[in-house]
Image (cartoon, rainbow, N blue to C red; front, top):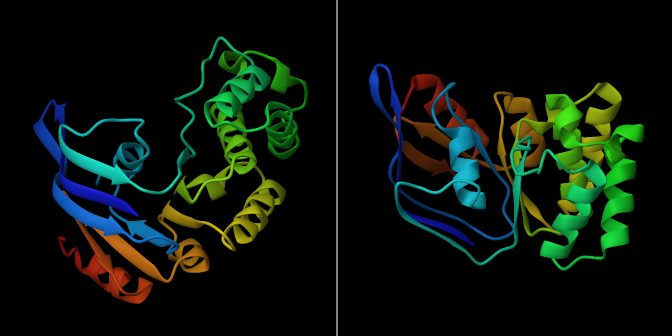
Length: 218
């Protein structure tokens, strides 16, 4: 279970405060995959970072009873002075996983070649995302947070990502942010809309799509 209680998040801009999460109270049930729709700048990526603990809310509480991944598609947690391999070793120890198994699995999945042994600062943004995805697939999570990661790499790598998720969904769920309804439908039966700082979960992707198109606030 992932529970958000009275969560607020505001960013300062030239035009003034931008409230992306405004008193959000919502529960994401166990073993249920949920998509998230929202306009550009609505705060979808911020929401995933807050759920994962990568970023803190201004106020409110996030309670987790599930093992939750970092947001796939977000590679800001890597130490850029360390190599891909060294980052994988560090993460494996944090999560109490077999270091050798995690390193081998992440290396094979990410397909970075010799760059896997080079400092992450030498990576392109796409390479960092591939490493983040490969590493997340090497660690067992109850819930995977996905931030448009299926757009990483070429078509062959994207298909590899989809197959990996299909296998993981037998025992895990996903919370996925995407602008593509077809992507959300392929993973989720339910969907949420994030609009004007509010978040509402609908019983179906179709209902959420209608609310999204209508510009409905939560």
